[in-house]
Image (cartoon, rainbow, N blue to C red):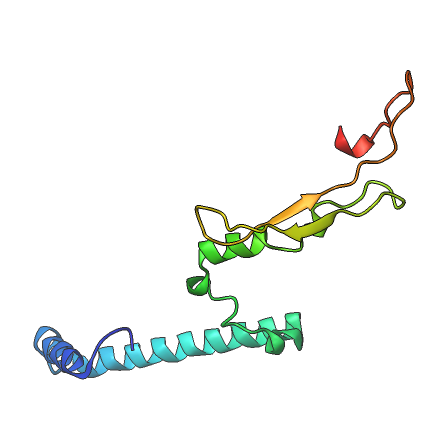
Length: 139
């Protein structure tokens, strides 16, 4: 409850009795109760409105998976670098040969892990004086 333990709550209640006085304390307690009820009602209404707008997909969301405290930048970078490397070297044309991925024999000096090596076969050579193909997406 907001990081307040039982002893601190008792001390705050005693300070409130002393500062406010016994004659105004019931009035302020009633105002606090109305405020808490109003906040709870607003939170419930917002939750219901969100559930109506998003639909049943909201119940299927794994909120623990989306917790930003669980992300480790080193793990994310490692997974991104070791992701399927064939996706990086997609062929330009459907007839182009696919790259061949093999693991390196010796581990790298910095990390001690083996890293993949990629050998991409070259396409057909151009004849002398033949213009290179133009790629609109690359320029």
